[in-house]
Length: 335
Image (cartoon, rainbow, N blue to C red; front, side, top):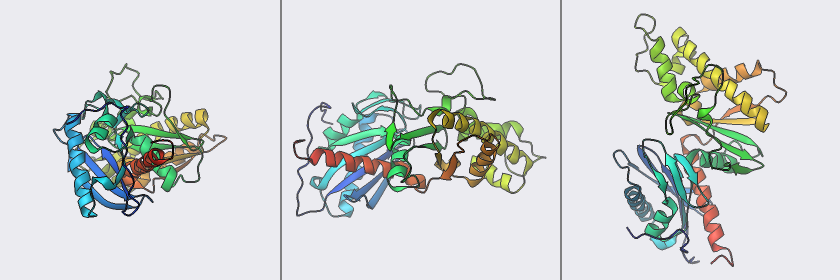
């Protein structure tokens, strides 16, 4: 793969007689998803591939390029029709320099110049950001938070993270770690020091793996027909059906999460929390957490709402970032 400096200009010249497109990318630890959109943001084609056993960033970029070509083939276009690409990454990113500072153990990336790699491979402007930040961006542009100046997007899946929007702008923090709420210390969580890259104290209870751990500690074959290997969504489903062990896990999870939301709401004064992720979208968790928050009788009672973009939140956020990137690179004086 050709290497390229992050400062090297990469400009795709518009052709007014042909349609133009952008690509959004969602890079996961086990799966890669791409979507091709027109300049209105409408998704025209999708592509996905497994990233299991693929840890090298350059190889992931080659896989992305293969997906881009497959998407363009669906609309009978070539790479000259592309205006920009943006990627959502599960980890700490520096979007100003285009660096992936660190990801989870599933990818294990450290200080990867992902923007430069994408630009060198595809010869178009590229941008990157944290996947939860881009999910928040997607919700703020086209989702349930379109009219909210300030809100927090909670991504609850295998782990736990937050995307923070203040005054309609993403807030990333000084070292780009704003929103790493999985490491919050609230009543009931472990106070033991945590090594870099390991699940945080709050995440060990509220994240999907933490919920499964809670279940396994309580489970016994005589008390529940739900198996030892139950998933968080199965546990919450059975909680709604009256399973006492499942209800205990749901209550413990919701109580711990309500502490975190209460504290975040006090500090940021955000009136809205949007729940996303496979676990976060479960109505039982949202309802139980809202009920416990109401008991706090806070002056500003935050609303908890499910994401309207669902699993596509990160991908749609990446498309929006790609559109912003394309617009920036085609403005007069920016060439």
